[in-house]
Every structure is written in C-alpha cells, then in structure tokens.
Image (tube, rainbow, N blue to C red):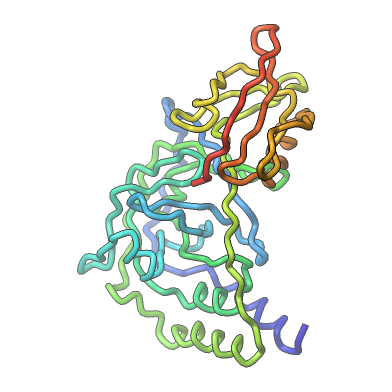
Amino acid sequence: MRPGFRRITALCAAVVLIPSSLPAADPPAKPAAAAAAALVPYRLTDTKHVLVRVKINGKGPFNLILDTGAPAVFVTKKVADKAGLEPEDDGWAATTSFEIEGGLTVPTAKARVADLFQLEGMNGMGLAGVELHGVVGYNVLAQYRITYDFTADKLVWAKLDFTPPVVKARGKDNSQGTLDLLGPLMKTFAMFMGIKPDFTVTPRGHLGVGTKDVDGKVVVETVLAGGPAADAGFKPGDQIEAVAVAKSGKKPSTFTDIDTPKDLSRLMENVHPGQAAKVRVQRGGEAVTLTVTFGKGL
C-alpha cells in the first residue's frame, strides 16, 4: 500500500456519519403486532459498511448503505434523475415506492438528493469495492427493529409501531461547506495514484424462497408470489434435500446435498439468471423433483 493511502482509507471509512439536529428521543417503540418480519439480503463492503439493494419508484436496484448516523435517506443526483425524484423547496423528495431487496416495502420514505462528499470520495477511489448510490438513514431505519447477525446472510427487519419525528432540513442544496471539496479532491488523488475503480456487476440468480432450519432440515417457509420457485411448484413445508444446477448449455446432472440454509445461500452465490436447476424435495413423505429456472435478483 502506498504511503498515505491507509490514512485516506481510514478517513473515508470514518466520515460516512452525517450529523444533524434531531428532536428529543421518544419512548422505545413496540413491534407492530400484525407486521411479519422481513429477511433482507445484505453484504459487507470492503470498508465494512452494511449494503442493501433498493428500488426507488420502480427503478434500480441501487446500492445503499445503512447508516444510523445519517438523519435521512440520501441519494445521489444521478440516482434521483433515474428514479424521477424532484426535491421540493424544503429539500425533500417524496418517493412513490421504496422497495428493499427481500420483499420489504417501506410505507413512507422521503429522500434528500445530494452528492455526499463521503460517497463521492469513496466511489472515486473504489474503496468500497462497489459503487455506492446513497444512504439509508434515520427516517427509515427508525421504523424497524433490525437484527444484525454477521454469521447469517440476511438481516431481520421487524416493523415498529413508531413514526420517526421529522428531521430538520438544511436547505435544498444540502451544502456541507468546504467539506464538499473533499470528494473531488479524492478523485484527483485516485487519478494521480493510478486507481481505477471497477464496479462491474455480475447479476445474481434468484430462487424466490425463504427457508428455515427445522430439526436439521432445510424447510421452505415462504414462497415469493410470481417468483421462479412459485412457477416451479414449490410449496411452504417442502424440505429441500439437494440441488443440481445446469452448466452452460447442459442439463442439470450432479446433485449437491443441502443440509443447512447456508448451504443453499452458498450455492445461490454461484448461479446466474437463466440457469436451470433440478431440486429434490420431500413433500408429505414423498420425494419430488422440481425443475426451476433462476430469475434475476432485485
């Protein structure tokens, strides 16, 4: 690593928190009785930020990091243009839909449109290993009880009976003073240091089931309506035993045993949209083989 680069990296990893004046804390919220928890896929970026994928107004997916220090959802101007977000005079832009991968739709989500210097600098130097499009902040995160387990591949989001107080707006331009210069400056550093960010995206295959471990067996808990698994005939209660994924231009042949939900997650990391697979399941004491074609993840 070149001299000074470690210092720049540490700075970028530390400055994602966005201070703001917030109202006094309200009493702890209670989980909404009728709301079911959602399982939200995530990944850790190279800078160890928690990243989820979000569709805004049906456009995307966009890569947003979770940041409890950010007062609100922030998206870049480029993303706002793609999603058709137009800030009002108070600086807020209302979304018609805000969908987080995993089947979670946020009922009310407003966003601030701004090219944050933190994200601009990180993207300019490719520090996160993926292009970042914004931040999910307090006005969305406070509506959920989120369980983080970094040994699992999904976060558990449970809706709370709580409406976050309105965050004080700073103005339509979201100016951060002289700090705004840091993003372009880091891009310049990257150019002189020969750093060329590579944000090539390889689409991930999508099956469309939620599973759970029941007495050491991988059991289908939910089937996404209209998803590949639903089209293939999966049903809640099916026990997944083995999967055979077809290689390019060939039929599925060799089965891989699935003993835990994590085995299925690992297998899904290496499949792509359009690939076919055969899945052996136990259903009501009978062996059933289902043929599925993987879809494209959100």
